[in-house]
Length: 220
Image (cartoon, rainbow, N blue to C red; front, side):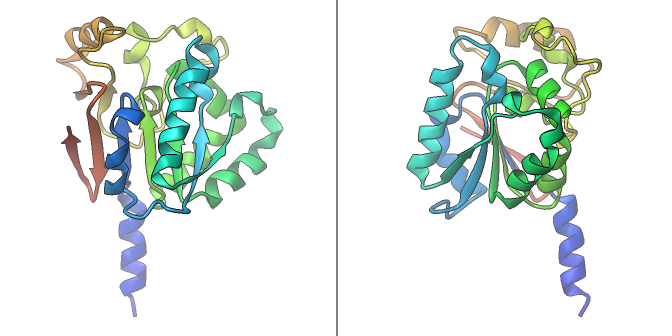
C-alpha cells in the first residue's frame, strides 16, 4: 500500500532533462525523455531569443522540429507578460506534458522568468517529473549559478537582474556551442577560465546531454 508513496518520492527527487546547444540538430534524442511525443503538449518558452537579432529564425527552427516530432506546441512569451500574470503562466506550465526553454541571452531569460514567477513554476514541475528540454540558454539556466556564461552572453541585456542564481536543476554547468564557428571561442574561454573550479559540460551543436534516473549521459 505504500508503493505509490515511495514511487512519488522517487519521482520528486529525479529530474528528466534533455539539454542541447542547437535543438533542431539533435531533435530525435527527444525520444529518450518522451518516447511517444505524438499529441503531447509542450510549453515553448522562446524568451531568451527576444533580445537577439537571429531570435525569430532560431525560434522557428526549434518550434518546427518539435512539431515534426508530433508535439502540440503552446508558445509562452513571458517577456511580453506583466508581472501579475504569474497565475496564468503557472497554469500553462503545470498543464504541459513537457517544458521547452530556448536559446538566446541567458541573463535576459533569467530576468524575465524571475519577474513573472515562471522560474518557480518550471522548477516545481521539473522536480515533480515533467520532462525539460533546454536549448543553449535554456540549458545553461538549469545550473545553480549562471555567472560563468558572461564570457558568452552580455549581462547588459538584463539590467534588472541582481544575482545570477539559476534554476538549480543540474549539479553541473552546460557550456553550449563548443567548437562552433560562431561562439566556439567564447565556449573555450569559459572552459579555460572555470574548468578547475566548476563542473563544466561542454556541448557541440550536434550533441545533447540526457539527465534521467539520477544519471547523465552525453548523446552524440
